[in-house]
Length: 131
Image (cartoon, rainbow, N blue to C red; front, side, top):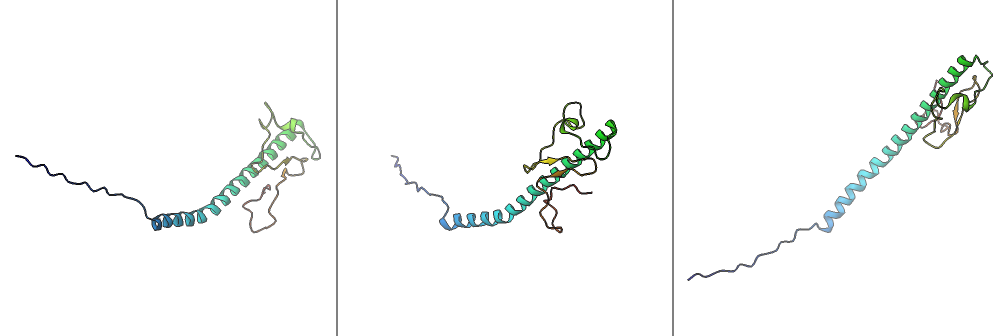
């Protein structure tokens, strides 16, 4: 005769304690506090560099236009002279920080409406053409 023994299985519940969850949230908040300002500065720096590149492209297009059209130094090219299919720049450049560009005459550098931040020592976010 066989006797079957029935064993009660113990169910073990695995869960995180409140202290463990709070610790994870704390660590994540510290990392985010460190990373977020760095990310913002990198984004601003990238936008500024892209704007300066656009200003350089505008200046190059102005110079090429002046040579091709034999313009005087006081002449001002129109956007139709510089931008479009078959022109010096295919599309008008767009400032990544929603600024607007002013081409100016041949003696004046192109400028962005964003400009600089007013601090000479901190130029990472300036939207000005650097010589």
